[in-house]
Image (cartoon, rainbow, N blue to C red; front, side):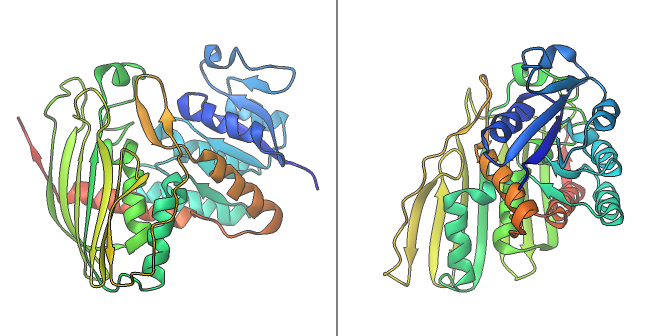
Length: 340
């Protein structure tokens, strides 16, 4: 069976993660990389991987099975549609797009051309998240009363000065899209969709050089009736502090935390025979002067390869990606902006 042929558009920090894990997978082959800034791809070995500055040129030169869209948020829809039109399945980085209507256009195009869209939601692969998912599915927690999510990270002026799209309303979209969409997804993955957006507030306390918020707090109600508290900030002093999720339920209380949902901080449930499993110690995506979510892109690539070759179920779908964008959009719509 031939290897899955990959291409990448966008060779920034996250594009390099895709590069790393594609070339490491025994059943995948990286054919080409595209970035409008030719300086970013100059260190790629051209004897093994071809480089381009124009996406259309790359796609007309090579027949690819999968195009990884790793460009800035506002370009995800455009580049996905181009890839689909040229016969590629798509891996699209988070967020899937900045508008629900764009997500719908992407899904409709994929259906029309008979291709798939894979969304990158790597926190779903976290051992702690999968363990809690199993507890919920087997009813070990019973009815969920309340979920609290706290994301307290650091993003400095150095981070925002690296790219002119970061921190802009039109191209970045907001902190929920760029930093914390993975945690909105974990909420959706574990507890389903949101029914009521009861309100919230966003503010920019410490980042006068960006157009978007740096802090926010929301109260919502899920379709199963549970109360959701979602609090976030990128004002943590000097470094990321935590990403935590607490579930208060009928038959137990569980908290996963650490900086990247990589630790079980509290566990007390009715079924005393259930023990905390050993957790694979995975690091965050380290980009030098800042850290991102848990480094699980190898599992994303593996899931895509196994789906295309053997029909293995997807861990995250285009519909999941659209649902997350819809939740974020509705959160922002419900928010009162604190003008300082």
